[in-house]
Image (cartoon, rainbow, N blue to C red; front, side, top):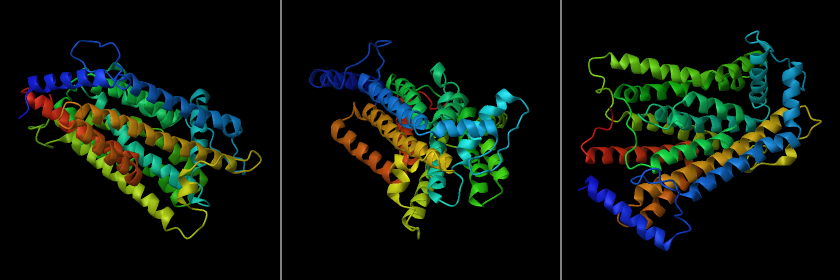
Length: 398
């Protein structure tokens, strides 16, 4: 049977032995307070390295292969390289409209049905974001959470505009510092927790306006409207979460909706992400065209981008998303590895259990995608957080 004192004592004994025999792996930062567990320097270095690689792989490549120049010129001129007209006014305010046009041009390039590879790559990454975005909403609702994790809206807009691979390692490091740095993860208000599954369901619907017009070969103008609407979805999700939590707080029994609401929210988004990834893989594996293949889908080929071609925005965006997807997978594995290490470091047979869970995580990421892998880790983390709180006589939700 678990109890608070033995759990903490066991953890500190394990860490002491580990620091003696494995100093290169357990080089710790100076603790903020004596009882905290601090994120190992190695984890921080890996995540910083992945962010740096992402910057070079996506933005550095876009600059050198001419995609960024074509992107900005199209947004400025109002005409795509193939002659398609770009809608140039959304608010009538140029400083707002121009950045929107840049993003619309970028996402529009992935919507061509002549070659399904860019579109399927977009679908797969958007599916992974279902879980990643839900994580930001959950963490922003915790009591005494890090000030950097308070705004889920900020993080979602950052990776929508700059790339998931560039921003997610930064967020991951802050998230790990909160979860790896304390035996007790901050609780979530009951009304906010109960609203999360409803928000998860709503977030499944938000990518539809982005993906449906291209899939149905709609008029280019409607595709552009869909791209523009997708830019509003982070705000829509956050507003819905706030309104749902207010509604639930006014019900007679706000704690009776879901027994484990955070876990439910992750299971909803994780399942949707996994099914979408399997659907994408099925389209690739059972395609009758030779142009659609696993290698061309997920392995970056820098030779596909040619400056003089009308499809430079499509091939350039595909290359961007391929690197984005690869590095997102690596970040999820690194993130999960350190949360799993934290979870198993004070249990019997922790080395074997950690290795087994890590293998399961990697297999999930490969087969079901990074969204499902991240959901697997976060669900387990919520389970362990609840156990620790209840072992001390506390409640999972405030």
